[in-house]
Structures are given as structure tokens and as C-alpha cells.
Length: 187
Image (cartoon, rainbow, N blue to C red):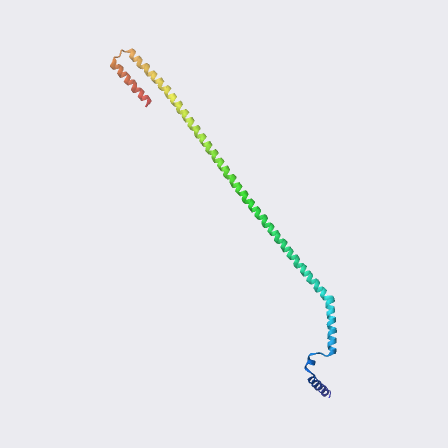
């Protein structure tokens, strides 16, 4: 019986719903509508009071963190640019220093080369001067030896001429022999 009663009520309700217009199907009952509006207002008030400030704070914190990260990135970029400029300046300075050192080394080498050439020329001039002095001394010695020999031969010839009366042919032979002896000394 109960089941019948429930089935009858269900049928009555179904007929009642079929009889109502189409717009009533879309709109809820006025008591449900009021309860929904009150529930929405309570939830909205709770969200407005508690969740919205938290959400706003979270968004502000996130924005501040992003801003901080952007500022750090900008600072890191500026520091990197500064380091790059310093590196480029140091590199340019190193190149300038290397060029200066190379130029000094070249000048030192040129100076050493000039000194070595001057010393070699001075030494060569000294050697040539000593050789000329030795040659002149040797000529003087040979000339003195030659004079001494000529004097000795002249005395020998004079002794032979005085010792024996020599005729003209003998004198000529003596002079020729004397010349031959002088030629032997010079050669």
C-alpha cells in the first residue's frame, strides 16, 4: 500500500509538472532560489573577507618576487657587461704591453747588433793595424839585415879589390857575383 501511495504521488507530481509551462522548468522554486542566493552571499562574503586578501597577498608576493628576480637579472647583466668591459680593457692593455715589449726587444737587438758590428770592426781594424805594424817591423828588420849583409859583402869586395890588384874583367866579374849574391838574399 505504501508503494502504491508513493506511486500515485509520483504520477500526480509528473502530471503536475507536465501541466506547468516551459519557463517554470528552468526557474527553481522561490524557496530554493532564496536559499541559493543566501548561500552564495555567505560564500561570497567568506571569500571576500578571507580568501581574497590571501589571494591578493599571494599575487603581490609573487609580483614582488618576479620584480626582485628581474632586478637581480638586470644587476647580473650589468655586472657581466662591466666584467666584459674590464676584460676587454685588460686585453687591450696586454696587447699594448706585448707590443711595447716586442718593440723594446727589437730595439735592444738592434742596439746589440750595432755594438757587435762596431766591436768587430774595431777588432778588425786593430788586427789590420797590428798586421801592418808587424809587416813594417819585419820590413825594417829585413832592411837592416840586408844593409848589414850588403855592408859585409861590400867590405869583402873591397878587401878582394885591395888585396889583389884586379883588372877590369875581374872587377866586372866581382860586381856580377856581388849582384848575384844580393839577388839570392832578396829572393
